[in-house]
Amino acid sequence: MTNTDAIVVNKVKESKITTTDFDNLTFGKTFTDHMLECTWRDGKWETVVIKPYGPIQVEPSCKVFHYGQAIFEGMKAFKDAEGDVFLFRPEDNWNRFNESAKRLAMPEVPKEIFIEGLKELVHLDKEWVRYGEGLSLYLRPFMISSENGVAAAPATEYKFMIIMSPAFAYYKGDVRVIIASEFSRAADGGVGYAKAAGNYAASFYPNNLALEEGYQQIIWTDAASHEYLEEAGTMNIFVRIGDTLLTAPNNDRILNGVTRRSVMQMATDHGITVEERRVSVKELRDAANEGTLKEIFGSGTAAVIVPIKGFKHKDFVHELPVLDNSYATTLMGALKDIQYNRSEDKHGWRVKV
Ligand SMILES: *Cc1c(COP(=O)(O)O)cnc(C)c1O
Image (cartoon, rainbow, N blue to C red; front, side, top):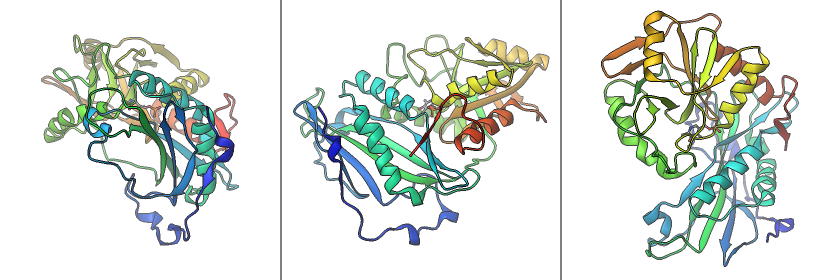
């Protein structure tokens, strides 16, 4: 039950773009002129509204503040040399959003609202997608329970929204990680595979402890034994041992990353052997000792691929070698070429806005 044939568009009177300093952006702090909002009430989605970016009014009893029903997606729009704008595998994000919605007992968002709404919004603010190496528009669809009242039950009202933020190639400096041997990001049978806001909340405290020790991220291991590698902070994990690229198989604790799938495909296309299997901390440490551990990297939409320089596990500390021919560099280049419309899109991942 949708009525997206009538997306209501209220444009800003004056764009903020002329007063935005694109050379000095902080990631995720600046937002474009418009946002999308759609409310689910009485069992159906109401009219999609695109309107000026700004505060929304909610009461203090709004359920999301109390029970944390909140999910999100992270996507990007890219501009090519001709000024055309593309999304990257948007239906994958839409599908995953609805997987998350189902797990959090929230209504699914129809394609006409998520994809068509997103396209219309990006199109309207397409001046905000800058052309240049590493530049993009970060897209943040999300949904919250917006019903008032503190009874602990799923809400009867939800808000689906999309906000957008201009992004640049971000390099956070060297990344060294601690392999988790105590804390977990996600539990068996839990919500780790969903892009639930609370998963992030649960990771901040252990991550702060890692930061205090001089490590930027945590490699999450399986909750039951802490013996198998699962994720690299808020990214999926890849390990290169010898010339084989390894990545953990998806399970209910792991976020099924679009970048992960894309990296695996790019690797295969480049003739790299990819194995989707469990990698134990022991195997990693043994490979480090034997000199066959060549790379560890994380994959995710925000930074595409983040090479990891070193890791610590309990009292074992190891620095990764610096390689001339790293898979991270090759695969990152290949992915970006597709995203920026610089190479043939064999797998049909680009969607023109
Ligand atoms: C979003 C996310 C990823 C990466 O997913 P992409 O679809 O590649 O952006 C990986 N792990 C976690 C925990 C995430 O939240």
